[in-house]
Amino acid sequence: MKRIIGTTITSRLLMLLLAVAVAGGFSSCKSQKKIAAQKAAAERAAQIEQAKQDLLLIINDQGNMTVGEKEDKVAEIVAMDLHDAEVDALIERAQQAIERQKAELKRQEEERLRKEREAQQQEELKFDKLEDIFDRVAGNKSLEMSSRSIEEALRYFSSPDVPVLIIVYIDNEITDYDKPTTIRKYLEYLKDQGKNPNDIHNVKFDANGKINELELIKK
Image (cartoon, rainbow, N blue to C red; front, side, top):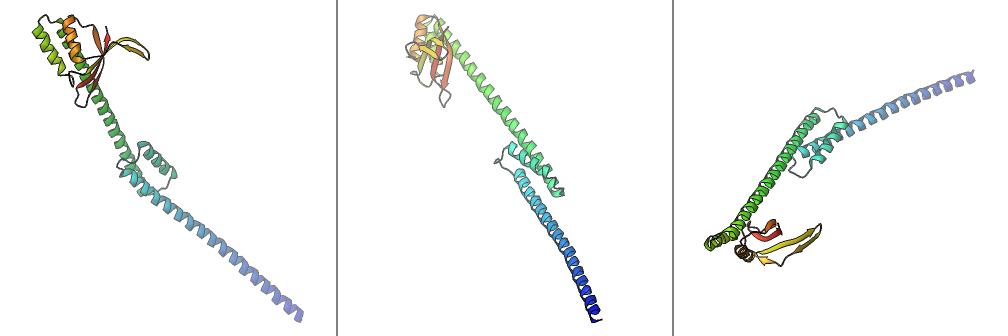
């Protein structure tokens, strides 16, 4: 009888211990899931905060980031699919800021090209004007008129001693020049010859927009 009672008590104790172990297992599983959920939530919160900071850097950028860098960062944040209203609003603002920057860069490039065209046109006008003056120096029968044309031409140059190089032969990278002279001597030569045998090939200007080197080529 005592053995039966002892066996019964032992069985009950085992069942109780088993129940406690099972309950503990369930509790441990729930605890692990809770920890994992908390960890995921913390990671998402950190991602959201970092995304906000990155987007604000793009929005408030003062020229430290290129358009490409900004577009890549926004695309990266969009791909994270954070489903956060504030992040979504910042994404829209960042995209608008990028579009404004692209428009400004386009405007600046168009302005640069316009100025280049104007500068080229001004140079071409100077060339044409200079060619006309050279022709007048050579073509004037009056010495007085030729002398006036020479003085008019010299106003385009930084000094009467500006070098004049006359190309007599050019082939790819090989260029042969006649004996160098100065602009005043060249103008006097035109006056004496009564004709202008050369065209303007290249001109160099100083900081004041005056010609400091003239390169001619035989017609």
